[in-house]
Amino acid sequence: MDDASSLLFNGGMVLTGAVIALSALPVMRGLRAASAAGFRAHSAAPALVPLLIATLGLSLILIGVLPLSFNVFAHERAANGALASSAGLLLLHRRYLRGLSRSLDRIATGAVVVLTLGMAGLVAGLLTLTVFEALAFGSVITWLHALETRAKRFPTAPAVSFTANSQHLILSPIWGTRPSGVTV
Picture 1: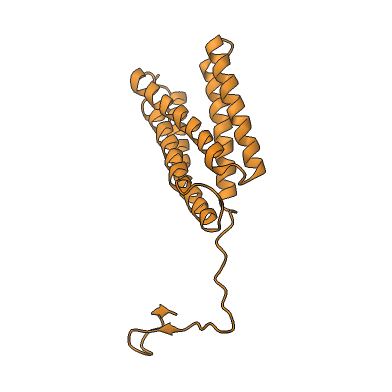
Picture 2: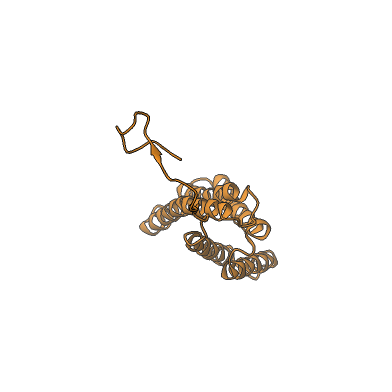
């Protein structure tokens, strides 16, 4: 399909995939901060969740770069990668991120219901692939947006407070020559 609408659709997929892949960075920073602040998530969550977000983004980029008209096999593998990444993200939410935010938990539950019912409807022939993709990826991207928004507000580690007996000195390698040095 070598027309303008195909070019716009595939370009939109590439752009969307890039934005999603880049959203892994603030989520990673937020999860690390929440982990440092004592959130009970497994220590692997700050690495695994952003990895799957980046994988989802890269899968969407490949869907746009490898349209059905170009290579059906590669396009379907990229679509399967996006679906697997989405399912993996929701499983990781259930395992590691549950309780971080009530609204995030509700959106994740809704996305699981949409994916499950959508897949059943697709297999039963009640939904077309296009409708399933719109429902599934729409719900997962909604969850991802909520996660990214929430990650910016995750609690950070408490600041180290100084007591009356503590001192805060900056020791320069050569006394008095530089304002930077070792803080004691």
